[in-house]
Amino acid sequence: MDRLKQYLNTTSTDEIHSSEIVKILKDLDDKSFYKSLSSIPKELIAKVALELPDRYFEDVIEKFSSKDIALSLMQLESDDQTDFIQELEDIDNSMAKKVFNFLHKDDQADILQLKKYSEDDAGAYMQLEVYTAKLHNSVNSVIKDFVKLRKKNELENVNYLFVTDDEDILRYGIGLDSLLIFNFNTTLAQNIDENPEKYKPIVAYDYEDINSVVHKFQEYDLASMPVINDKGVLLGRITSDDIYDIIDELATDQMYNLAGVDEDAEEDDDLLKAGKTRALWLGLNLITAISASLVIGMFEETLATVVALAILMPIVASMGGNAGTQSLTVVVRQLALGDIAKNDAFRTIKKEVILSLANGLIFAIIMGVIASFWFDKWMLGIVIALSMVINLLMAGFFGSMVPLLLKRVGVDPAIGSTVILTTITDVVGFFSFLGLATLILI
Image (cartoon, rainbow, N blue to C red; front, side):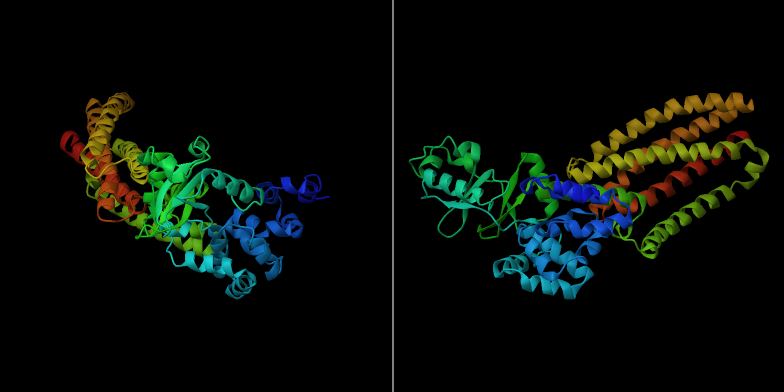
């Protein structure tokens, strides 16, 4: 008996979790993986397909009929339904239409509403399923409705009650902990009137940038957030699990961009596609390497006279590159988290310059002494020490300034910073080292 069947046969139906199925499937070899797909409970097909890495999505849907997929899709929230349909459209548009046509009309309407938003809009991440109450509702009736809907599994992640007026304008947001201490025999309005400011909700607008919404979740430590339109009408909610996914995606994008690779290409099994994106970045780095070589070529006679310079050159460039990367990584990450305010650039640059200068002085002394004894030339030690101070100072300055400038002009700091910084640290490192050597040693 394979691992998936064993799990399903030894677990009660209401305890079967899609995440456990996904964990088992990911650990299987290709042959066992494909064989086990048919064992996935039909009601969990869509959920498992979404939770697996993207490269498995097509393999899962090929195992089941359009009707089976649609029935499983109706078990999901509207935001997950939309994600599934959009991913299916990218792979097989014809099958996506068949699945969509099998769905209930309400589900179809929800998907069409969410698809109108771009991936940067908060509305693209909201669930349209949201329980609301009116100001004139009694607390007792609201609690009873909550209990009824929860027993039917029609509500998930319930921790916040949205209160609207008769025109569906969002007025208040009440946490369940507050709702439970209300007077059950009076209306919501009567309870809220005791301290209305306490229940003013933190909201997201449907066309607001999702990154701004992420910052709100982090700043106010929210579990969910209502989404409204420009007229204040409640449209849905964004929950913390969606925010965690977005944060993971942003972090992944940053890591890939800093390394010069494309997330979509790397998730794809198409080697040619991944190779092209990497080749483009490597081509830019080749230009960097050539520019550094041209600087070295300017001091050909100096290198011929003092051969020890060729041995020590990589040390200067490497230390500068690593110091610059440290500053760059810190600043890019802080920008992504919103920890650097608009008028905070000087403080950030100053901090990185001081740190780089301090490290530059420490390692300049260490390397200066090593070089002096290594080649028995005290002046050579002075040359490499001065060069390291200059290069690490420039690395800290440009490592912090480049991403800040890119952010200022509307370019993702993670995309172009590495190439620019590498060029600067290599050129400055070689030029300062060989230039000082020419002045002092020749």
